[in-house]
Length: 432
Image (tube, rainbow, N blue to C red; front, side):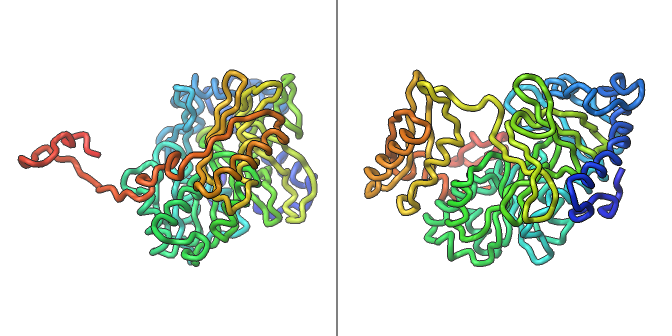
């Protein structure tokens, strides 16, 4: 397995999709050899390495049943980190990596067309707990010499007021977060008397991932902050799987993982629409063969002006997403596109919707001066787009994202057990 960056394929090492396929074919035997050391794959591979398409699909249910170390392919003493997914199934999905695995993980994440470098101040605003996301960005940034600001978004020690102060005072140049975070930052900055588009001149780019983002929302975020928004796609089980090229297309890292498409009829094809199935090619701690992420995607092989010769992927979200309204099926992507194509001057950033009993209700935060126009425009757009009637309600700014949440400056407390007569001893032991 790789021990240095130079052992890994790099962009430009192949000049066609045919050469890319040859690179995958050359690596696959070592991937199968590593998988054969895992208890989970030992029996399927006991007769020797079969063709990849002869192996069964590995499911999330398989990973849950193998918890915690049923897919371990190395001695446990060689593990560098242990992680669990952020999924909501109620059962943990474990992932683990060696130091050599981490070289591949970090190098893939750092494949950004606005690159990470030694002069960067990099705010990592994703969880640092069992999910891989914060650790991945941190490792990639340090690999390339950047200074990391570890702004975990699950920590009471990093409220939004502190995020804005750090972004401004430290001259942060790059950030890594979910797309929704960047809109919340914009609202918090404005409440602090700052203009996102002009008062953060050091900012070069916003790296985003962790949730699907439509072109409309990404364009709005870019206009608000005045910098490119660069999309990333991956998972705790796999690390980075795709990144954006200079032409604005999301490319799957097929030199590091083989993608397949699982279709609703149960067949598996090389490209098209369906659920994404991946076989990472550089994994030793936890080899995965034909792992179904259950994300709905579109994968196509076509030439791109970037010259990377990698398939293009469009991430649509978790398979099965969406709700019926009348004769239509409404997805979050459908509504997000309509909300963020409203004119910027209306200031609509935060919204929510509910599809129930054949009715679609959408609520948007909007200033009183623009409420009638925003409600009318969005109602008409939903009627002409998805083709359903919707009840659109205007809410006062601060309803969905409370202003107090954006301005509070929380204390960082430490455990105490002795209190004075006028102190709140409800904070003993379980401090917060």
